[in-house]
Length: 204
Image (cartoon, rainbow, N blue to C red; front, side, top):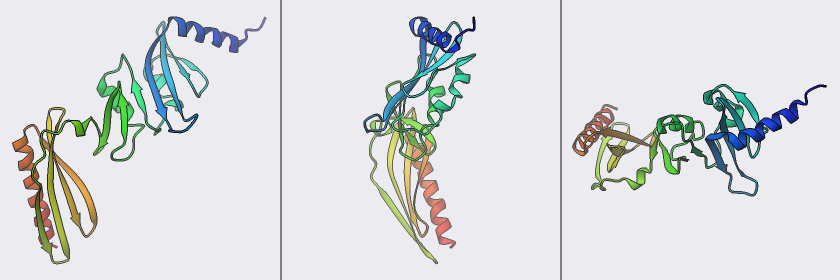
């Protein structure tokens, strides 16, 4: 008698749900009816299976990394949330970069909020200001236009101090961050960067 592969897979999935362990979850929320869901990776006896609210089950896979290469874990996605009891925060942040693409995009990792800043995910940056510095503005008029640099917002997070530079010139607006391990060094680095920008403007 031929084996019914669908029934066999269903039986394996049922056993995996009863005896397996959830090791990774990707959730999302599109802010509309039917727009939320989740994909899961479950481990059972050294094998890994994908289950989902939206996709058919997949597996077995020989490793978690192999399971996470599945198309259902591609990105980006709306309001992503990642959780895992076996992956480190560094590993989860690397995976989370699949799901964010623009400056200021947010993702939750093990119930912590992370924000994309200059290509890196930072944990709750606006909640960890050391103190707001007095804004110092310097403007240098070059031969072909005006360059203005605003030095502002000394921020402290993840053990580092960051200073934001807001730059306005004929090409428009852009933002740069400098960082150091102490507030004094971060401020000094910001001053040096301001001087570089002013010198460049004066040479135009």
